[in-house]
Length: 196
Image 1 (cartoon, rainbow, N blue to C red):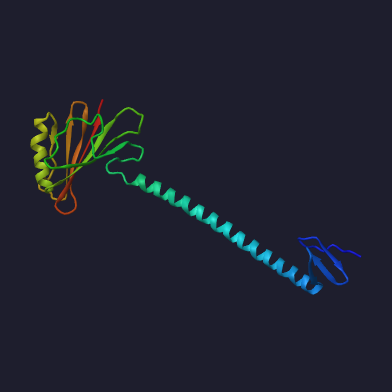
Image 2: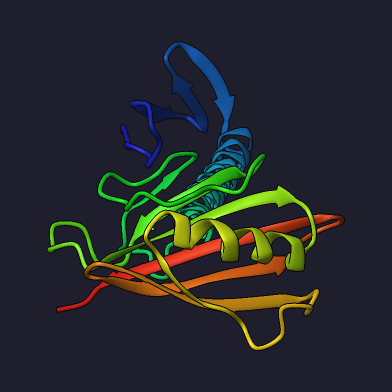
């Protein structure tokens, strides 16, 4: 009498002996091998599930790191007041008005004061220079009127922390801010907007 046993291979049982592809096993050996195979299958299945879960977690972490990285880039604006406003590092934005630049100042960035694709409403630019706040502001007080800019001086021209002066020319109005930076450096921020 032949009996088929649940095993991955076709097995025939005759007189208490199991034949598996020509190999003889006793019933005890066959059952032990079957149990071991079931344990191994369970272990391998568990390991496979763990690997899949780990791969999913790694993919999620990578995606969240990319999102954080993109958000960080948006926050690293030099002069634009809104991440939707175009900004150029190291050069003046096309359309920025003629404006005297303090000797030795280095342009960090410039930006528009409106979102991309909309009519220009104004501009901002930031320079960094050696020199204290009163010296830099005094220079602008002398130079801006020579270049047809109106200059309304700050209340305290001796303030060494920050000074804000109002400026205007034609259809542009705004301010110039001189602020103490790191060490002996000062930051110069100019913002002008179109007025109707």
